[in-house]
Length: 392
Ligand SMILES: Cc1cc2nc3c(=O)[nH]c(=O)nc-3n(C[C@H](O)[C@H](O)[C@H](O)COP(=O)(O)OP(=O)(O)OC[C@H]3O[C@@H](n4cnc5c(N)ncnc54)[C@H](O)[C@@H]3O)c2cc1C
Image (tube, rainbow, N blue to C red; front, side):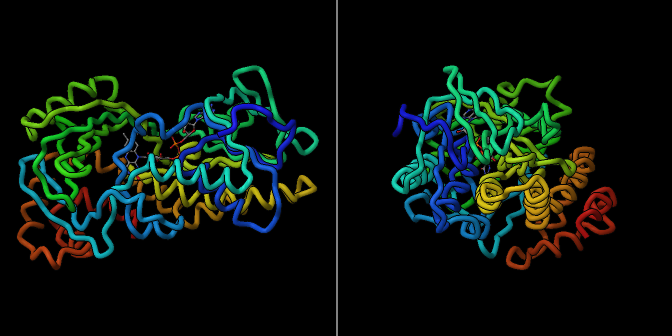
């Protein structure tokens, strides 16, 4: 992939070759207009492990991108929820999900973009994006070079906070720490994921065990932001593994950050569109962000195309508003409601989860739907029902 020979100016510069940036690119090349596009990433994302459990719902995946079967490691048919007292409830989703191979997906997408004329620059860090000047933004790189762009798509994930000087969505408001390990020699069903709730090992969050190939798994924890100061994530993960999966072989450990939404924030500025984790598009309860990044990347590509062709500030402003409204409509509004639910969920005591699991496990598994879960909760868990009112 391209190392040098940059043009001075591009129609569109995409920062970040994660799901959001790549899908923005895919939507740009699938348009009839001939554009000059630069995709830049500070790393070569598929040459290092991607910090992710790689679980995704089928519907969300297929709705946001044309899925290549080689990106799918395995299909998931059910989820087993473990209450703090070890009782379990199994939920079988109608549509199900996948564990995907992000390395393969991202590499394929980047090569596809390059084949379609996108200039791909890897191993180059963007250090700054200057405010819009005469319909261009200047993008600075770590090696002291720069390029200009008619529109910048910021898909750089949660840390860089480009645009903060212009009050465009700055630091993620609910940035949660996560820690996980790849393990081997684990004996579990290949088509089931496990979610564990319990204040001892995942205060304000949960632990996950997602299958990863035969006899392998991704085991991790995410905790609420408010619990970070008093907990060491490595210790929490190790004690979780020792308790539930003492025989597994740990291959590698990783840390990561999960930026959740909790209120409406500005995602755009003149000739700048933020997408994916850079725009905190993660579902604040499930903490899933791949499908959300793909979907918001798709929208970013669509609206970037309009922005390139805009000639007046009022046109640009209207495109910014349309992009933000489109995101709010497809996911954003619901995420804001979920964030309100989440703020109550963290105060629900372990005993309530234990009682909930007991009641739900007495219902026939095939009949377990979300509305049944809600009805079973009514009367038994006023706090939970109070939290869920935001979703009604
Ligand atoms: C531990 C963990 C487990 C997760 N598990 C799941 C899961 O199972 N399912 C799910 O749906 N979601 C999961 N997520 C969330 C998911 O990984 C993210 O939501 C998703 O990766 C967001 O995609 P993105 O394209 O917005 O950002 P990213 O995937 O973070 O991509 C951003 C890219 O930008 C590049 N970049 C950053 N800064 C610069 C810069 N200054 N210059 C140039 N390039 C830059 C980075 O190198 C990176 O390649 C998990 C997250 C974590 C931390």
